[in-house]
Every structure is written in C-alpha cells, then in structure tokens.
Length: 70
Image 1 (tube, helix red, strand yellow):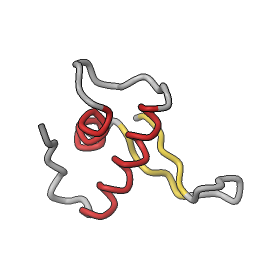
Image 2 (cartoon, one colour):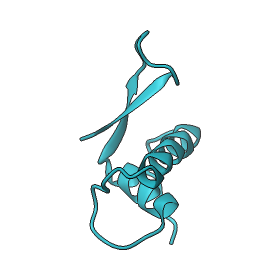
Image 3 (cartoon, helix red, strand yellow):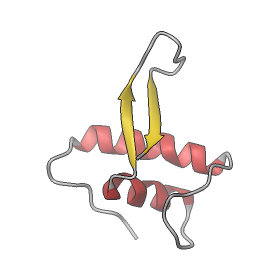
C-alpha cells in the first residue's frame, strides 16, 4: 500500500519527512494511526494524513530538521 501525498505538498519534502518518520518508527516510536503496516507505509500514511509535520531547524538540531506530531 502506498499513501498518496497531498497535491499541495512538495514531493521531495514528502519523501524526506516520510523517510525520517520511518526511521523513528523503526527505532520504537509509537504510530499516530491505527493498523498494522510496515514502518515505511505507516510513515507515508501519517505524513499524508497531516499527523506528522516538519518544523524548521534550530541550532540545537543536529540533523537539520525536526518532526512533530500534530
């Protein structure tokens, strides 16, 4: 199953955010949606649903971006 990104979003940003979220899910973070899916699919679904958003980086962030649950 592949989640469709919202048409008003940037495809590159969608992929980057979903990738980072998938890493978080594989590291043990709790999904914001119910269901049993692989981490990559769940991450795409969460980003497409608007549950996970990117917050601009601060000087404290090492990797340059911060993902937060909405």
